[in-house]
Image 1 (cartoon, rainbow, N blue to C red):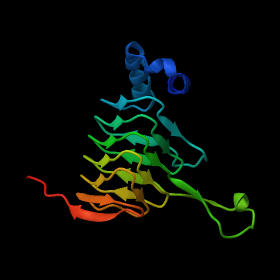
Image 2: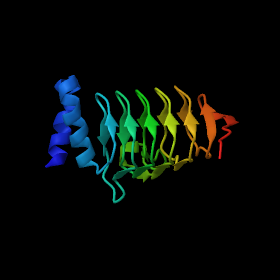
Image 3: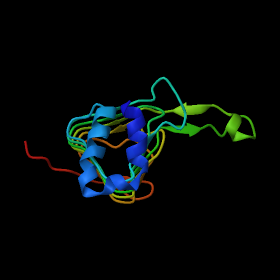
Image 4: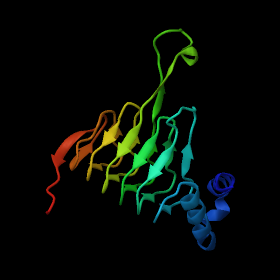
Length: 171
């Protein structure tokens, strides 16, 4: 039942009204079994192509900003205390371009993604298929295009995203 309600609350802008935001958050939290989930307007969690791994797992206290698009075709696991800012796009599948000239006839490649605890993905960042891990405590700068795995505690930026520096974390 919550799956149907999820489609309604993600689609109708009325759930952006302050009084109905709590209803939207409740339905998302129940649909995806997530504790402390914070959801903004027009967040889409979709499965464009079905696969055995097409599911999402949320850790505790995850924040999803406005206009976030998450493809879970390949599977996605998000750790605790993760922030995914406005306009982020995450893809976990791609179409093979080798084979038939009509690429739509070719195999779909799925790539499961793990986003570690305490990660922050900046506004407008794009995570491309083939990325399988964004390490613990990593930060992805706004507008970055991530095409390869991101090591723990690193800060990456650019297109394609490259490491800018490693975070110094207090023990």
